[in-house]
Length: 285
Image (cartoon, rainbow, N blue to C red; front, side, top):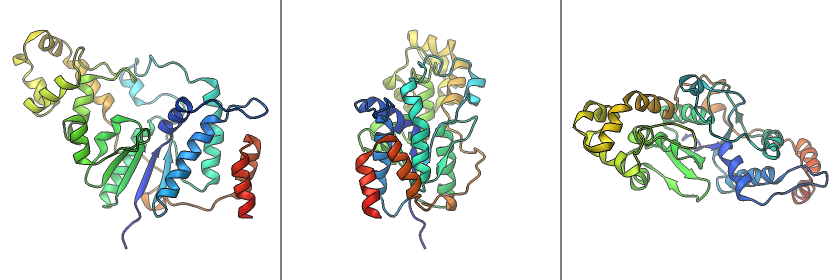
């Protein structure tokens, strides 16, 4: 029997998308509920369009990760999460659990690393996996078994799609990200290197290591910047690499849809004042 397709949802990506893309919503007590409605709507839509798939939701855990130990300035420029968004995380996660969906958060690593490890395990089992995210970094995980779906555009990227979008194959995405750096995550990269230069060098020298080995022959100011920032480039590569070996308490076969707790959902929807969803539950009986 062929295993069901696995869908891994980047919950943190959903959270920020729902918060920034949707108008603010509050209940009669002034409690922010818009992100809750948005995230759960996206998950419900995913379930409806993929009735035969196993779906697991992955969130970032609280606290710093191993990347902060590698580079103290990692993500240092990000503003703190707004209180009206932070307050919605717990109800979102409570609803996900009540829906019977597996929810994973591992301290010390990011959601990306948990997703990467699960996708890697699924690949070893020859199981098809779809990663639902808005994070371009996850393109490094794409292979013959793993595809990416952008939550913003519903664009699906397989190996051919990654090459078309980035100009390189998935195996070079980490090299590409390391060269360019990432302002959002404060990964430094090589100053002045953008997508075109990164792709050009990777096509010419084959990999980041190949570029470093041939750094002496890269001319102009950009060549000088490359040579001045070799150590920074190597560190950026380490920061951009998604872990595939996070210790998990669950195995792929355990990521199945459990029983729905209608009573818990009723209490949560009542507190949040989601009247249409309450009506659905009442009609369900």
